[in-house]
Amino acid sequence: MKQNINNYKTGINFLDLKPPYSNLETAQTVIIPVPFDSTSTWKKGADWGPAALIDASSHLELYDIETDTEVYKQGIYTHEAAIDLTSPAKMAASVYRTFQFYTDKKLFPVIIGGEHSVSIGAIQAASAQYNNLSVLQLDAHTDLRREYEGSKYNHACVMARAQECASVVQVGIRSMDISEKAYADFSRIFLAEKIYQHDEWMEQAIGLLSDNVYITVDLDVFDPAIMPATGTPEPGGLLWHQVLLLLKKVFMNRHIVGCDVVELCPGAAYNADFLAAKLLYKMLSYYFAYKNLISPGK
Figure: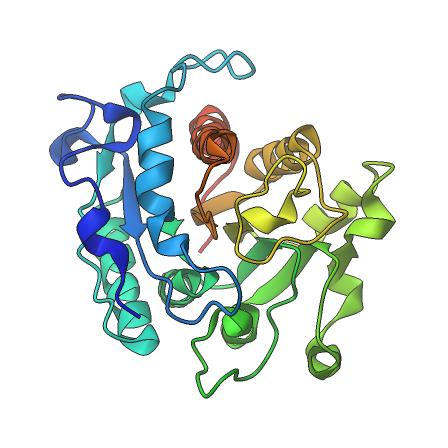
């Protein structure tokens, strides 16, 4: 399937920032769009996700009330959508190289997808750079298939690949195939139905994370009532403040080495594009507000 890379709005930065805040030379964060949607198995269109998120971000208020910060002033560079999209494996390798390039430059890397397979290269790169890595997955699905439809880089295999190089904590899960059960560690899985009415589980989840953490947010972790624009929506998802509270606690207590927001499948529900953009901005606000509380892991 041909990817919508040509529809990516070249020249438009995250938040529509202008110099000096958008310059690579002074940035502390890099946004890496990956408009890839080759292996998704129901609704296509996640390759439009990066452009939709970036477009919606230009309408955000740049002052974050909660952290009393304007994180854009830290500098946010938007990488061009020049990832190799010719196959899932080549895409993952390209994301790996791009992630590593910017972390070597000491920038905080953020991937925006695209289907969930775009996370594989980033997780593998983070694992190569940091010992004792944990991956915190916010998602409706376990994504633990060893292989799916002939590919180990399918969106249904993301956390199987993550398990090969990191420990995994999964939050918001409410759907899986029976074949994944053998690979699921239910002591590290926080099912949506078990966590919906209280927040005590959050401390337990954070306690399972190592010092260095990569965060991957599949937007279908949210209930479809507030996030309908995903390729594989599942009823019974988490709500906005519940997700933010968990993320805030993680950013306050662990060294975050990178993150992603994936599986935005934009359409008529433009409020979903805005939610995805604001979520990303909130994550950056938490990162810079609390990063000095945490010593980098080895």
